[in-house]
Image (cartoon, rainbow, N blue to C red; front, side):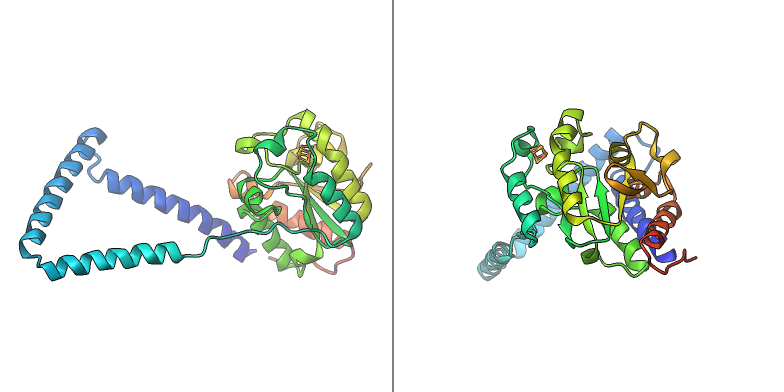
Amino acid sequence: MDNIKKLIQQQFTDEHVSSINTTQDNNQNTDQPVSSINKDNKENHQDLASSEKNIEEEVKTPMDNQKTSSTKDTKVKEKMQEPALIFIPPVPTDPQLLELYNTCLTCKACELCDSALNLVFGDGNPNAQLMVIGEAPGADEDEQGRPFVGRAGQLLIKLLNKYGVQREEIFIANILKHRPPNNRNPLSSEISACTPFLRKQIEIIQPKLLITLGNFSSQYILETKTGITKIRGVVQESSYGMVMPTLHPSAIIRGAYPVDLLEKDVVTALQYIGYDVKLED
Ligand code: SF4
């Protein structure tokens, strides 16, 4: 549990430190108004920069000019040669899932396909015992066409790994297959349009247990309006099969709930499907 807490703590610390540094850099003397500090800093910086430039110009030789320009050229060339990251969305190998994937690729049942970069169909083991269901793709997922590749996904996978489960063993999907603009909440019309694909995925995979993450997927699958904090942690029956509703890892990363609750639910889910694991300290 310590490693997982360290991961969350590190993510917070990185963000916090960078925000503190930025604030401190901009505002070293907090007694002064920000606008006056920024103005003073700017003027000081301009003065310093112009005197440095004068000194440099005085001592520069034609050879130096040539060197500077060739260094710049090299840096520009190096930058241009950096390989661009290209993500290839996973395509199912299972024939039934592949057929469904192709249907989703051309789906125009709601407008999300117009704004999204990629279809995020879901990926993993077509014979998985455990299927994780999130809400909708975020920015990272949209870019890569793969579910749960952002920080929330990494936290969940790290927890599963801790108890001996690899990402490739499970199947991960979302309620929606295309990203809502700016990560807004799914509309009920979009959920109605897209969930037949999810139902079909579950029928094909036939997992022993679904883990639903957060309010949207848990309430949809369990057909309830009760909040996730009240329904989480207990394996329950639904029209989609047996379900373990739990907290969304992004809520843990935001600091809304302790990671221990998510870990406890993950362990209960693994025990339900037959894993010989127990909650570690
Ligand atoms: S989000 Fe679902 S229903 Fe909407 S276009 Fe994409 S696949 Fe079709």
